Length: 390
Image (cartoon, rainbow, N blue to C red; front, side, top):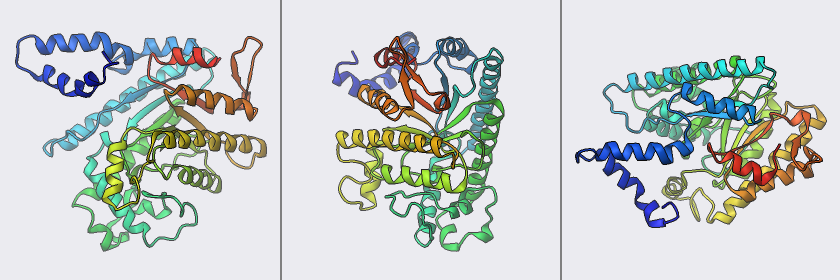
């Protein structure tokens, strides 16, 4: 059925109707069907506890795992908004503790650390409209700010040191210009400060428990660009770097330069991206030339992604040789076979990995835990067989 474009195009609306209809038994039958087919294919459980058996089976097969809490705030109504956001935050905290117990148990058995991650959508912890207003405020401050790093990065730009005056817990109304405050609604600053404190708390919890925190963002929001406040020899927080954005090549290089100059280990989650329609519309609304903020074609996006692979792995190679900077770590998120092969070939060509006598790919010891390739659950084995990844 998924091979029929017309079915895919109408599937969301059809499922929404079948799950909400008042026709007797139809919602129940539909949910049962979805859970036993699509749901089971991609999701091993609805809670962290339900995911533990799959996580352990993957680890014993030399494969790491990442839990994902994907609830977003778009559907939140004003009434009870903070209660919903708090409940979501508390659920993330609880899931992180479950994952932390799992990670510590596996390490006690002798398994190497660094194979577990937890993905959080920032837009699930705060009203997305607040992020939009804050992003507009950041653009206002950046228009007059002086920063040597990232000046060449296209819209929505690169994070400036002054961004913290809008989104950090140290921000005060006295320190923020009136021209910036005018772009925010009453209560926005306090909610942004609460968001920052919660993200920092989650990062500290991840650091204590020995896994990484992946910050996933929606489209085109500089408020969620970078968090380098949790310092470690290995990155704890991984930001998302979306290759379908035209800014990606310059943005990636600026992020690497900033990390090296400020002495922290950079964590990267490199993906193609999933909000191309909204990104394009946002870019066009700002009057950006061509195709807005995104590449005009898939081949250009593919080239951007593969270029990111080259930039990241060449940087890692240089950092490991020189010892002058804390080495970066990366998760390449892709279901594209060509990209998987590009990653493998680049690892081999740069001496970061080699083939064992049986043909399996093995990372160099100092690279282990620093380069990862991620796919959705149940896609992993098929790609491992294609790549020969050990």
